[in-house]
Amino acid sequence: MTNAQTQFRFRHTVGERTFGFKSLAELMAKATPARSGDRLAGVAAETAEERAIAQMTLADVPLKLFLEEVVVPYEDDEITRLIIDEHDKLAFAPISHLTVGGFRDWLLSDMATPAMLEKVRDGITPEMAAAVSKIMRNQDLILVAKKCHVKTAFRNTIGLPGHLSTRLQPNHPTDDLTGIAASILDGLMYANGDAVIGINPATDNVAQACRLMKMMDEVIQHYEIPTQSCVLTHVTNTIECIEQGAPVDLVFQSIGGTQATNDSFGFNLATLAEAREAALSLKRGTVGDNVMYFETGQGSALSANAHHNVDQQTCEARAYAVARKFKPLLVNTVVGFIGPEYLFDGKEITRAGLEDHFCAKLLGLPMGCDVCYTNHAQADQNDMDNLMTLLAVAGCTFIMGIPGSDDIMLNYQTTSFHDAMYVRQALGLTPAPEFDQWLKHTNIFNDDQFTLNHQVPSAFEKSLKRMLGGQ
Image (cartoon, rainbow, N blue to C red):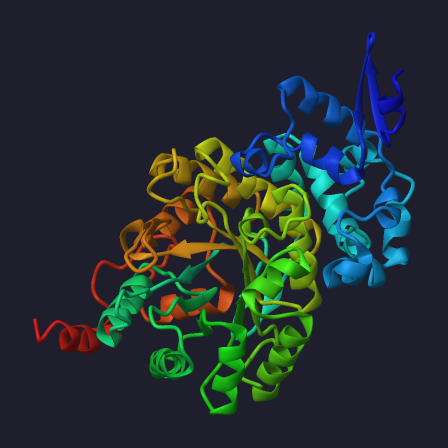
């Protein structure tokens, strides 16, 4: 063995060849299934052989090591401090003797029941979840995620087994209220919107956010819809909206897995704590008090040059520590949104979506997915159909509902109102129970719960006629 090889922290010998990895972060990066973002960052395995050796080496790493060797320095990063300082040793005890490979075997075993997974979740760090995902096949990720039950509530109950919720996303390129309202009613008539009615504003400022919040609140109150609304503006804007008396249901923020990423987004953990307390003070929830909504996505840390030479999937999992801290109603990965520089094609997008969903559910988050891609990625709607179906089998909390699958404001391709109907019918899934009852009460659903009433519900008829000029 050469002097250089003796400096390696982790080694694996195959025949007469020894492969070495200098740190836990390097080992995890090399063990990650291939994706363009890690190649762009220069941290990916150079060959399939090196990746396989790294995965075998990673399988032998004790879980306890993740509490001793951090991938981002403790003194430089408040998320690392959050992960280490709030780690639950008692919850970790049942799995503390395992290696990463042993952890995979345990997760797939009958011992890892939904109740047991809930018991240990606070003892699992994001890096442990990321590590075990790297040595799992897609079917492993699906099977374990399906056993992770995470329930949250605000005006309805999200995440119950046998249910699939949707975010109704009525974005408009000019924030035209009539166009947004028409999309909302269209989505409701396709049984979309129980997770949230959430708008990405084209003009992102406090005044516009308040205007959109008031409009959505009027729709929800007028039709007595058991759901919640959200304007996906910056968290500091939402705090100002609350101070101005706007009807805020959920506080939104995009989050990343390193402090430097979140600094680039313009917030820190203290900002999120302030926002959560402000939203809780409004007491607008009827069946629960989960008031936060977070979005994530592999590649965000790298795009901000804030990844610390950590692979993008591990950075993504670390974002879930931030989300878990603030007890959100909803979290979703916008899995293909950043572009092919990070996830090149349909295969990479599919793998990333299953990884993100698995890691988040294992850590106790109400995880959904924006099953999407940009127009310059090597992907199409069939790839999205496949991922959407796999995620629904895995117990995904919610997906997106957008008119025609095409977000005309953000200019990317995602899932439509009728896509949600397809997957619910194919797998026998229903919306959140309170929303399901509302759908029947308004005659949007027929009695069988899975098919739509093709007549326009009388409750919506006047509104639609007014929007369409009396036609």
